[in-house]
Each structure stands twice: as C-alpha cells, then as structure tokens.
Image (cartoon, rainbow, N blue to C red; front, side, top):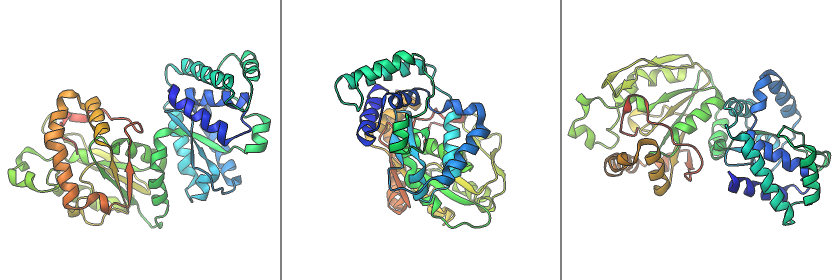
Length: 372
C-alpha cells in the first residue's frame, strides 16, 4: 500500500502542478476508502455521472491515473475519446464502491498522510510542510473532500475512482466497443494460462458490461472420457462436446439460459449454472478458444502471466502441494494446446498480467484440481 501510494503521490505532484494540501488529502482518502461512500445514494451517483459525462470534452490524456494498489482514477474525457460507453465506466465505479472499504481503511488513511508529510518535508510536493500540517490540524478525521479551487480551475478534474484491476483491461474494453451492434448478444471469450487472472477479469468485465458469464471450469472432462487417446489430444482436456451442445446454440440469442455444471466432488452434474440475459456474454477459461467451437466469439482475449508470478498465484490459490501437479501435468497440457492451435497469436487482444494486478481466485466449486 505505502509504496504504491508513494508512487501515485509523486505522479500527481508531477502531472498536476496545482496539487494543494486539500488535493493531497483527497488522494489519501481515495487510496484508503475508495468510492465506498457512493453506495449510500446510488441513484444520485448515476445522475451526477451522466450529467458530467455528457459535458466532458474528449481529451488526449491517460485513461487511468494511479491512486494506490487498490484504486485508480479513470478520466471521463479520455474514456470518451476512446469511444467507450459512459455506462461501462459508471458500472465500474458502482461495482468498486459496492465492494466497500478495507477494514483497516482508517489506518491506511493516516499512513498515506504520513507519506505526504515526508514528501512535503523533502520539498518534493507543490506545497509546504507548514501548509500540509495546518490543513491536517484543521481536518483531523478522514472524510471525503472536494478538490481545492485552484486545482479545479487549472486541472479541471473529471474522473471516477475504480478498482485498479480494471486498468490492464483497457485494451479489452476498446476492442469490445469497436464491435458493431446487432440484435441478440455478442460474445467475449477469455483464454489463457493458469492463474493469469481470467476469472478475475471476467467478473470485472461482467460487472461493467452487465454480461452473463460461462465458466469453462464447469466443463471438466468426466472420468469415462478421460482416456489416454483423449488426453493426448491438444485441448482434449475439456468436455467440448457438451459445451458445443449446451452453450454454443444459446450465446447469440441474448436471452437467459442455463447449462449443467460438473461437480468434481460428486464426479457428476450439479445444480445448473444460470447465465443472465444481456447484450454481452463472457466465456472464460482455458480452452475457450478451442477450434472445435468454430468462430462463435466476437472478441477473443488471451491472458498470460510470467512464470514466477504464475507459481506464486497457483500456490496461493491451491496450496504448495498442488504446484507439482500444475507444473508437471496441467500447465504442459495447456501449453501444448496453445502451441498446437496458435491460441495466443490468434487472439484479438493479449493481456499480460504482472502478478500484482488481479487477485488469485479461490479453489473452484467442487474441488477440481485441474485448471480449466
């Protein structure tokens, strides 16, 4: 938290020369509490956003500016210039707010204030230590504040605070927005390496788009089909026959549907998985780009992660003992599939996670030990 905030503070001091003590305190509050205060009146937040977004002038500026390891500011003008729907950003903000602030948010806030104090004392901020300490003395408790008048006049701030994990997904959003509209629904398919953040990205994108999600995890290959011949196939490690029968015919309609979910604990089918109606569908998981499925997707995204980060995240999610199975069996099977069908090279969008963006999801329902 501290290192990420310090980096963000230095960024804002350089990028926004009008930064004052009040603006630095606003950054402290945002780094610690996020936009959680918006949840108290979501209707008002929606109205205010839509009015502000309508007024925003397109601007060639970074879409995201750092705040902390948990949050970034997304500029309305940059978002608009990229041709991205305002409601996507609004949904991102409200989804972030709904997650609530961390339990230690107040402690984080005061740690951030300490970082500001130290940097001001070093002469690295546009305001003095005296101005900062006087401001803090007059405002001892954490509270949401407005930007200073000088900052508003010079910097013309217009942004929303969102989960930092949205930032690496910007190329995906841009590609989605470029797709022509049509009746029914369009589909984004997310493939990629184990622990690369596919499930996390799908959940974030679903919140922004209002999309229903299909999980390739639910198409675990039943024991009866796990023959040596089948497992020797590149991509044979998924029940592609059932996905073809139960999911593919439903995707383009836009209507709600459900499919059977494989329960690894029972080694049989569990409760159906419901997929909500909407203009977008997301199919997430390794093997979602399998050539047996044909050209069902409108946008294909491939997620990758460095090997050292992959190991850390698999270990955090599945335990140290599970890493050997991933390293010796499951990951080589994935890599054989990626290479055989040029999965990464053929994707419309490639997203490289660095091991810090995104969070490793918990082990999936039913206890399957194989990454799909």
